[in-house]
Image (cartoon, rainbow, N blue to C red; front, side):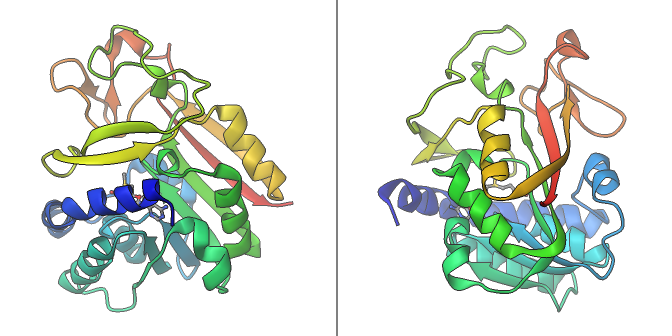
Length: 263
Ligand SMILES: C[S@@+](CC[C@H](N)C(=O)[O-])C[C@H]1O[C@@H](n2cnc3c(N)ncnc32)[C@H](O)[C@@H]1O
């Protein structure tokens, strides 16, 4: 495992307990942590074998189990897996399975097939090799299975997040090197100081990685909202619970989703 992944593993481990507590409260109060968009785009998943990549402490995995899927969650971080199992037990889900692994290494160590590979909300930027990721997804998919991704739109990733809705490019769209950050978390925990690394991908690179791994894009949707709150003062929540900068509504992309099948 390279030093970047190791640093990310340590960093995410520092906020695992906070995430567990936040998501436990949400899952005890609400049926799901998934957005309406995800639920609608996924369709009926009852009885499907579903693997959730980068599952964190398992909140979405449990929501997917509550929709009737047979779920397996995968995450790099042992603390996340520990708390995901605990969260499942707290929620009375006894058939969810959680695996500690780098998602880029599933091809070497996990040989079960799935109807759905699910990965959403803050995932691709943590992966140093998108083609290798796509090959792992391909490896996990049953012949008639599909991949579902919902994540930050690559074009949104270029902006200085502290200045939005003012548009200041901070991260070049075509950046190849890892970006080093000293803070982790903030969306389901306080931010903690911890060196971590992330990567930029263009929309072309995402689509090309999947295509070169043998996947066919059924559709790719782009949205003018973010799936998390960046600024309490500057964003408003729409009726589906997504976060919008009013100045950019119907003008700029913030999130994308896609469905891909085996060619
Ligand atoms: C932003 S979180 C995913 C968000 C998730 N949807 C949630 O509900 O919290 C990113 C996750 O990716 C995991 N991760 C980062 N790099 C990984 C890798 N190479 N393999 C597996 N998991 C990884 C982190 O441990 C973290 O749990």
